[in-house]
Image (cartoon, rainbow, N blue to C red; front, side):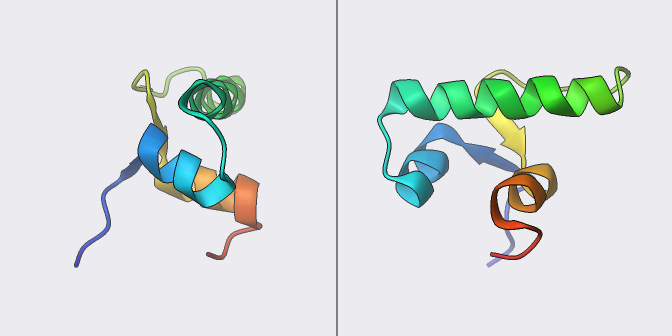
Length: 62
Protein backbone atom coordinates (compact mmCIF):
# COMPACT_ATOMS: atom_id res chain seq x y z
CA UNK A 1 0.00 0.00 0.00
CA UNK A 2 1.31 3.43 -0.96
CA UNK A 3 1.79 5.85 1.92
CA UNK A 4 0.05 9.20 1.79
CA UNK A 5 2.10 12.36 1.45
CA UNK A 6 0.80 13.73 4.75
CA UNK A 7 0.31 12.37 8.26
CA UNK A 8 -2.88 13.30 10.04
CA UNK A 9 -3.73 13.68 13.71
CA UNK A 10 -4.82 10.04 14.04
CA UNK A 11 -1.41 8.79 12.94
CA UNK A 12 0.44 11.25 15.20
CA UNK A 13 -1.72 10.20 18.17
CA UNK A 14 -1.09 6.51 17.47
CA UNK A 15 2.67 7.02 17.06
CA UNK A 16 3.10 9.08 20.22
CA UNK A 17 0.24 7.87 22.40
CA UNK A 18 -1.10 11.37 22.97
CA UNK A 19 -4.52 13.01 22.90
CA UNK A 20 -5.94 14.58 19.74
CA UNK A 21 -5.32 18.06 21.15
CA UNK A 22 -1.65 17.28 21.70
CA UNK A 23 -1.47 15.67 18.25
CA UNK A 24 -2.71 18.88 16.68
CA UNK A 25 -0.12 20.85 18.69
CA UNK A 26 2.64 18.60 17.33
CA UNK A 27 1.39 19.06 13.76
CA UNK A 28 1.15 22.84 14.22
CA UNK A 29 4.73 22.99 15.51
CA UNK A 30 6.02 20.87 12.64
CA UNK A 31 4.26 23.08 10.08
CA UNK A 32 5.69 26.23 11.70
CA UNK A 33 9.21 24.76 11.60
CA UNK A 34 8.77 23.75 7.96
CA UNK A 35 7.61 27.27 7.05
CA UNK A 36 10.60 28.81 8.85
CA UNK A 37 12.91 26.77 6.61
CA UNK A 38 10.99 27.62 3.44
CA UNK A 39 8.27 30.30 3.69
CA UNK A 40 6.95 29.59 0.19
CA UNK A 41 5.75 26.07 1.05
CA UNK A 42 2.09 25.18 1.25
CA UNK A 43 0.96 23.58 4.50
CA UNK A 44 -2.40 22.09 5.37
CA UNK A 45 -3.96 22.66 8.77
CA UNK A 46 -4.26 19.39 10.67
CA UNK A 47 -1.75 17.56 8.47
CA UNK A 48 2.04 17.44 8.35
CA UNK A 49 4.34 16.50 5.50
CA UNK A 50 5.26 12.81 6.01
CA UNK A 51 8.95 13.20 5.09
CA UNK A 52 9.41 16.22 7.38
CA UNK A 53 7.52 14.42 10.17
CA UNK A 54 9.68 11.31 9.93
CA UNK A 55 12.93 13.28 9.70
CA UNK A 56 12.11 15.42 12.72
CA UNK A 57 10.39 12.85 14.91
CA UNK A 58 12.27 9.68 14.04
CA UNK A 59 15.60 10.91 12.72
CA UNK A 60 14.69 9.98 9.17
CA UNK A 61 13.64 6.38 9.65
CA UNK A 62 10.43 4.81 10.83
